[in-house]
Image 1 (cartoon, rainbow, N blue to C red):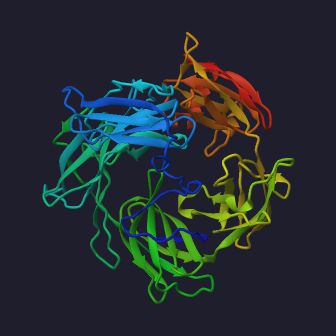
Image 2: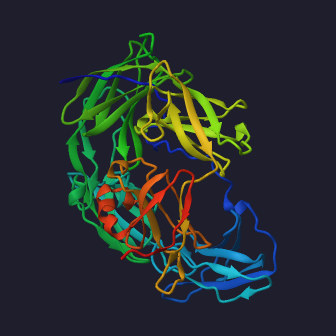
Image 3: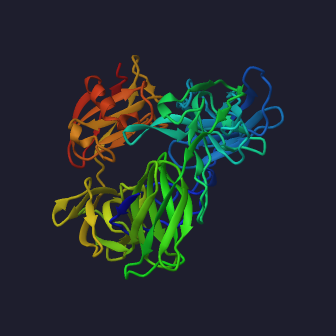
Length: 547
């Protein structure tokens, strides 16, 4: 037996159901209006064409063909008829991107030359008709198989997912990779569909959800095809367009499950009766809730059916502003005497300062977001008051503050606490809160803009532009000193970074997010251009693809 005492802090995340995923709290603005809801200006141009299936020239009906404008968030859509034909009329002059999509087909942009690449820009003149703007769609792939237990019997309700190895925060992780997750049926069969051509791993997971006491210690660890618990030993498979890959069968790996026991008390030392204790396990970029358990009248709780792994225990009382978390490592035995001592929510208070000499934005349009590097901690968001003060209610912990919402022509310049720049390193928030935080906003966006040109001086869109600090100490994640972007419909890229000394390069041989890996950045230095960005300077830099 092991004894674990945890220093607990409060968080704001709402308790979820046993099977719910709890994603990390990104600092997004309120979701913008969907492009399809914003109409384009009316004009006299027309685009028409046809959509067929790859390899057969068979028309594909009910394909959504969408036109997006380069100078607005507006779009216009058409749906193909039984002959696969579509027509977009009354279009204004301008530059556009055109795409086609339908369930069970791989979405594609017009002029796209490689998977997940960018297509060509379409330029329309007033009154122009562009015909034969055609698409060929590939069907998506399917993986099927059966999941059995160690006795050869089928297992019901196993979650089976197609995964890809992707760069997340500087390291490769297995992430869900499109397609629909599947659950095994009464004979253990599963079917994952909607997979774009590519390489995948398959994982099967069966979790126990036993809220009460149980002597049953049988369980199964996450199993990767062909039947291993190690990602390093998982077998990668390739799916072609329209291919059905049958017989991807697995036998789940049996393990002895563990139990976590302890007590959950509020800030006054009283049992948090009625609260639920959740065991959160890291899952991709977020957390997966496992095995919820109620807090008994004496404050005790028991979590059952936990397979080996790293967990964060979380308890909060609905309707009360108190929560606690504690990290727990489960190996091959039970964990006892975990102490969850809740604390009340804390706060960050301060003032927003705007650039002098510029008409300030309306305070109520500004929102700030405080985020923690720990996914289970959650975060907080608040609107700025009319006097440009703010208060964000959050748990105790370590936080950074960012501008979370409109207007889009204002940018974060710095966050200061007691004259110290804490923009990137953040600051600690105790139970007594933090006051006097200054958030400085500016209209002057620092960074670089320009075009990527080929050998003939023609602009390229299907490239990545990566800009990163020359100082490797600034490469840690998360960081404002490393950024990747792509050119827009006007063939112009824009990258925003703080003032400093940087490398910048245009690349075609890089994965999305790969620039978050310090080893990758170290290898790019010899292929990149050196540039210095002054505070508030947006430097124009035209690039050629780094070879």
